[in-house]
Each structure stands twice: as structure tokens, then as C-alpha cells.
Length: 256
Image (tube, rainbow, N blue to C red):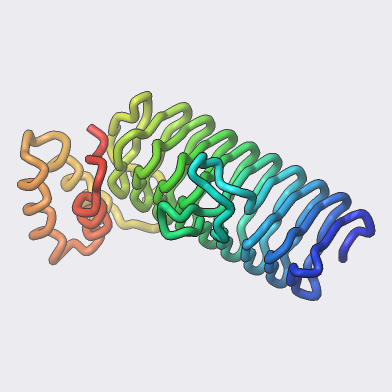
């Protein structure tokens, strides 16, 4: 399972069935779970934990030092879950002590070539990041989010669950759950209806989300007034709770 040209640190822990391809390097304090495949010319540095059944393609750089001038060799971490696909030339950095000290990638994510996930990012589950998508430090991304090719998010932005960030879009404020954004700076264009249909949201649920979106973006209400109305509706429309939570938790202000 381990190619003879691969270099594996004695301080690394690999499950018995992990595959490591030619010329890959697995550094100190790296733990890799069962069924994970590391292709050729991959570098994984630690402290990094990689779960089960991941596939990391050639020339990726995983768990190296954060690209942060304040970083001073603190023992920060990268946590990667299960069943992720990480394609060629991706870079995923460890965290910094200016945050919680860890970068987190959840489960079942599809990370395409040349994607950069910076220090202290927290990525949920079942996301898609198309080629050259870039997340600056401290970005939080919810479940099922899609980033189009060459899109990006500014430091400390939050992108809510089921949101869609279009190709070449630049996000510099928080994107509420379900919202589709395009352009630079990112501008809301409605909700991600097609994505919700594929995830078995009913026509009624999608209609309720669209109505909540209109309260925020089309009715001329103050955000606080829209939040109050959405909170009342969420008692009988639980699909609105993700939208409501992302509005309430925004620190940078939402895209407008």
C-alpha cells in the first residue's frame, strides 16, 4: 500500500489499508484513517488528522503552515473528515492562534483542482468547490454550499448552508443560507432553487424560503423587522430556521 519512494515519518500514524503513492511525504503528527488514498507527490504535514475513505490527488499540499505573517510555529491543527475528494494542486492550511487554532473540513466534500482553503476555515459537509475557488482565513461555510470556479470569500465571511456562490464571484460580506450570489462584490440573485429541488425540498418549502428572501431583499424592511417576521413564520415553517440563524449570526453584515 505504501510506494517505496514515499517518505513516511515515524511520528505519523496510518491505518493498515492506507495507500500512499510515489514520492509523497507524510510528516510528523499526521494521522490517516482507513481506506484513504494518497496519490503521488502529495505532501501532508501535521498536526493533521485525516479520516476514512478520502482520496487526495497528486501534488496537493495538506496541513502545512498557515500563510499568516503572525504565525510563529505554534502547534495548530488541520482536521479532515471522511469521504472527501481533494483534487490536484489543492492547498489546505492549518489554523492559527488568532482563532481556535484549527482548520476543519467536514465529510463528503468535493474539492476540485487548485482550490485554496486558508487557515482557520471551517467547512461543513457535502460542499462543492470548483476549480480555483479560494477561501481566505477564518471563513465559515455551511453544508451543501457550492462555490463556482474562480470564486472567493474574504476573511471572516460566513456562507450559509445551501448557498450558491457563482463563478468569479467575490464575497466580502456574509451570505445567508439558501441565497445565490454572483458578481464582484457578490450580489444576491435569489435563492438556490435548483439545489434545493435536488435535495428533496418540497415545492411548498421552496416557496416559503422564497417568501422569506423577499422579506429581506424586496419588501423595503429593516433587517431587524425582516428577522422578526421570519422568526414568527419559522414556528410553522422549520425550513426557515437555517435562513434565520444565518441572518442572526452575521458579523460582517449580509450581502446586499
